[in-house]
Length: 269
Image (cartoon, rainbow, N blue to C red; front, side, top):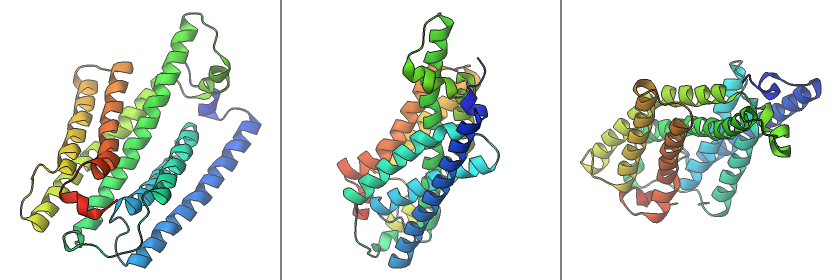
């Protein structure tokens, strides 16, 4: 099935609304980035020393990656609505429950590896997130296309939203490409974290919960990419595996910090 009209621009009015939405997203990105810079100036260090700082930086990078893909002439406007919705949710959680006053780092965190390791982790998470958005929308679009193939009549939601998405095949390909592109950087992120752990704690690996779940996330994405490349997994089976992998990353982001204790707990939430 070909891409829906939303993938190629749609009506003139739809294009106008789309340009307005992108312009507002650019404005919001600049405001967000200004907040991250202000935090950095306040603490005089990299502004991702705790979960609050990580969250506001992560949401900013997510929007920045999305806008960069748009600037590269790749039409991903279809990701705008779920992206903005979840970014606002992330910011709401950060400012409501995770906020911490400006403060200096504990000695173990006061290292140039903070700039390297955490920044790559944030960027990888942002790209994995876009892959997850593509995967979720693929599942909806695939169900819509299967319903049409059976001769079914789409409901109001499907008619107004799902038919405007790119085809299921296009969404599946997008998710696979972005996950595959960022996976080597995630590998580097884990290696950089191990080197930093060696400097800070005198050991490269200690089965800390954050280390374990970073590795589990790596394994999950490796299985997904391997299945796609060698076993010919495509479609819904691969999509479920990709969402499981992103769920591991999300648990490592929130769950490990909040519910588990370990070496990384001193960063605070």
